[in-house]
Image (cartoon, rainbow, N blue to C red; front, side, top):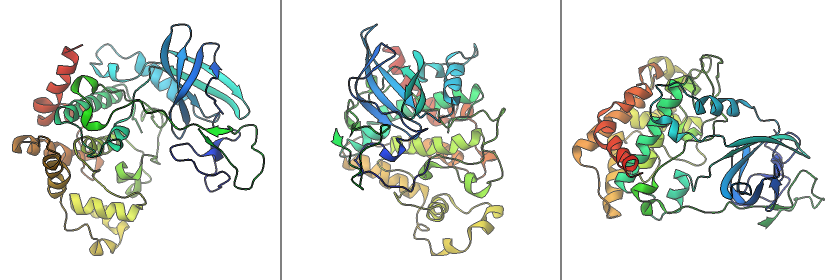
Length: 379
């Protein structure tokens, strides 16, 4: 799909209308009925490869999420979710954190044939909950429980052999809308809660969106489409090496930080790769010798050199929580969490812990997993 063309006036929180083209998104309207069963009631969101809709199952009289994939999307996600829904006997608790496919079918539209997946609906994403908040923080026990579930889910996915990677629409040229473009953009409904108001029983998560997932044993993947802020550095410095399970560990560490902290580990909306590398060096130390030659001398002028991981933790976790009148981490928990994160953020992917080792780390065992067990015991 081309991304440089701008044909339609942008609508905040709505997918780009340019992607409604042959091979792209399927135009969906409120009130549409899929598969003679699923009546669309609102929109939940969109991703690179799909739009997601809240629908009423008129057979079971329940709410579901219908994911309508792009016509040219890879059916791999369906295969992976099917595999994850039928795990090996000794898979542990991670299976419960992966959404099951309740139904699947095809829809024919002006832009092609679209695979549709039906799952249970989620109320919100972790990032949406933080955006809705004025302090962008979760209660400490909630942050621990979410982090625990995330690690459990990634460990489960790895154990199965996978890496997880109404406003009017007006064309800017004034021409008539093509048949494959919806007449209006639907802003997603908000069903969630501000992060600080989420209670422990409400903190159960689902790990979804497997459009970029792959099996290293069956295929090699050299290009990472993970957002730059959480993209592992080997995607830049080792472009001829396939991504591995260790690539997930780096992104997992960045995500855990975002769950516990007020701000992301690395900053920048318009950040480029050079700036991101400078931030990584400033927080984590020098690059491996083999990588330094590929970076050049610009790091010596970096404004990030006077920072450290501990300094950023103090500012975005501890001070932020104190200012929000929330409990901060005690010194022993802080040390355990930073130790775990630093090991996961090792530049060399081969030196990072496995998801199972993260699960067995001191912070997970003493602080995160017990909070998750409280949720499970309350069921």
